[in-house]
Length: 73
Image (cartoon, rainbow, N blue to C red; front, top):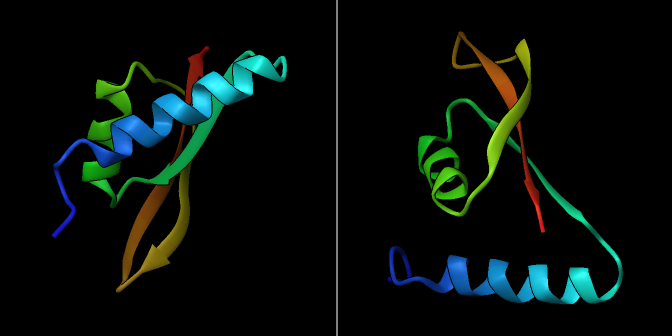
């Protein structure tokens, strides 16, 4: 019921503001390649892909990657 209402973006904004106050300059996320909604969300929030572990896991007989994303705050 709370999907696609902007809550994730608002929470990420708050997290970024508070992290910046503490001197944090970079936000990182690691996401499975199966999670396209999360990958799309992070891209929309200004993250860029900065690395990938190819075929790092297997679920339901299908290999998946771990995608690292980064945003400078």
